[in-house]
Amino acid sequence: MKKNFNLPNFLTVLRIVAVPFCAYALFKNGGNERHWQIIAWCGFFTVGLTDFFDGRIARSRKQITSFGAFLDPVADKIAIGTAMIGLSMLHKLWWAVTIIILAREISVTLLRLVVIKDGVIPASKGGKLKTLFQGFGIGFYILPLPSYLHIPRDLFMAVTVLLTITTGYDYFKKVLTK
Figure 1: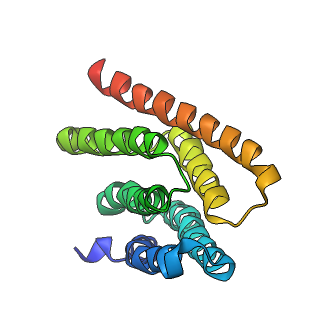
Figure 2 (figure 1 turned 30 degrees about the horizontal axis):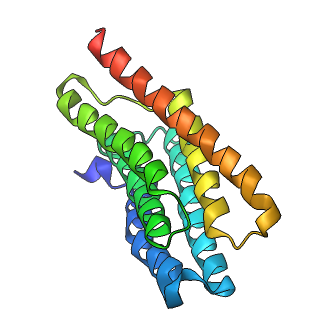
Figure 3 (figure 1 turned 120 degrees about the vertical axis):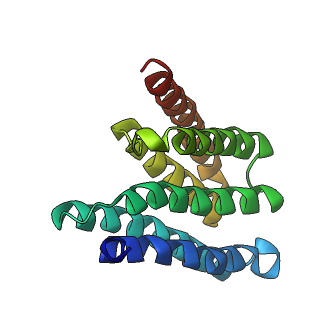
């Protein structure tokens, strides 16, 4: 257990602990106050940025552990899921988008659990790109953007959904063709 206690894993756990505070800011006063929207965005952005740093630190210090390899994508899903469900509950993001993305995230997580005895499935480059797009896409819905940016925001989310579906398919294809 001691080898699992390192800075990258600590940052991953910290990301999970920070998510309720991000959700609080997202919902504060009905989710419609500009300054709370910016605070929520800053919180979720920091969680996403920490995701980037924990992986980079783990690789550079050779502190990659099975615990971290498993928990890191779970932390991503907790943050993404919380933000998306919150935005849908606030009527800022279509439930269909939330359901499609969360169905993919849950199914890939369950797939990882089923095959964990064969080793952790590492995130692919496509999966990392998908996570980046999800983070930015969700950020565009959290921020109080002017209405003329809603169409580009929605198109960005459409690309995000496409990446989400495509990378989910790739994970299942990789496992089922072994």
